[in-house]
Length: 473
Image (cartoon, rainbow, N blue to C red; front, side):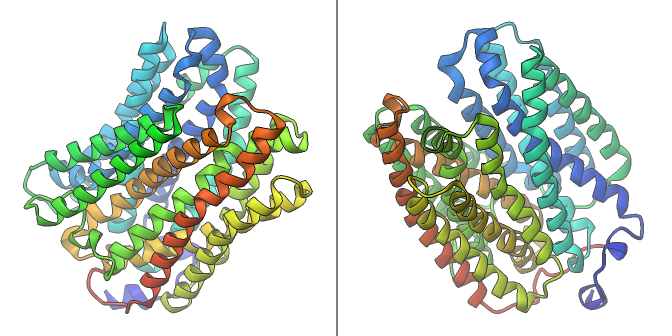
């Protein structure tokens, strides 16, 4: 295994030895996960007008997230029970079924059911992609693989809204779901031939139902908070959801059949500190992604398209920064992680200062700094956590990389939503409410950013161990 760890890493070496088809399959799965959410957000006004469901806009996001988080959290255990290849094929088929349901929906009820099914397929797909990366590629390639994943996300950020906008303008929003159904079916067929069946170690066929039930209740509470217009009740539901997540961590640590790695709740271990950093740092940025376009339109007079691409600068900076650090060694990687966490911490501070009155280029610069912070740190945190996981926890630990971030996204969205409503956003977008929201949404993100930066710093101060560092090649 040491020759794998210390051999030079190049893009040519990454794609050699039959790894190219599997690498392409992983990129397709990431594309489907990223572009589906972005395209759907773009076409939702057309969906609401056609199906009469404007009151259920937030349910389309909450339902997708509920399915995605539950599936993502269980993806590692799923792969251990049935094998990586059958699990991945099933993920593609579930996403296909969800897209078909939404495409055929005669009303909002079936459409929302389709979104939940899409979330489950997407969550399994993204979680199993992390499992495949952990088990099918040598550790020396992880930095470049995660950089490629960031590049696919950046591409989806540009092409997703464009595709959705063009089809919505043509009155063909259902075509979006047929396109993604075809891609998901292709993914399922390709997985059948490209993935080995027994990539993950076989485990007893026991599903941690109690932990999944607690996770379901926590995500449901957080999802409801994001949809409630009463800020006090919304914040109470966020608190309830966070309390249930803490209970889940404590219960899971003592359980015989676990949902998460045993070290997930231990901030003194690399996985625990890493998951905490991912959770809080992801929660930090979601307020800008949700409210940035509306604030830029109201406060700076940008068109919807221009505002969308101003926000997309965040994702593009993430992608470019990920490529900059893709060849980092473990020691230099720790320094990049600390720099990234500092940039993310600076993000809400700078946005609170410049969003209301400064020139648009300064707003974009603040977004770029925060996006670059994710690019500098996210892939390297993934690599650090994977290297620290013992062999028996690699499947569930790798799939948790996605579920933890998606849960942080849900928590951050709920906190941002409650804060924005307190600032007057819920009563209507006016100059006064926009100015107030542009301050308080980012101030509310500061405690999250600080907690994430502290966890990231703690993780990088821990020693690099040898356990769990090997991966197959």
